[in-house]
Image (cartoon, rainbow, N blue to C red; front, side, top):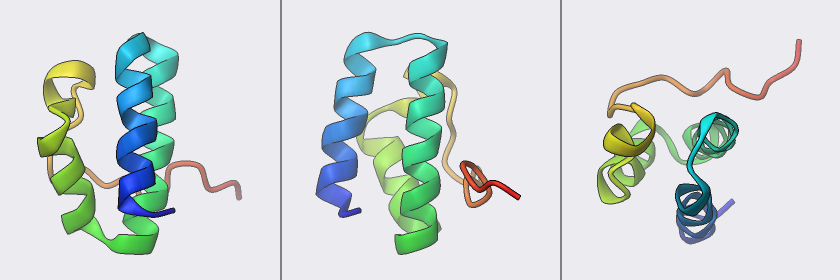
Length: 69
């Protein structure tokens, strides 16, 4: 997933708000972290103010989110 597409999808989730949308954002951030690294995740969190909206802070590890074992 590109960073631009992640930005678009997260913006949609922000419009809805709520717990299910927080989980959707966590899944998106997990994919971004695995593909682009922690710096890209932190950038999205800051740009979209996800700390305020969903209590997701820069430095959080999402690498295991959405991986079934």
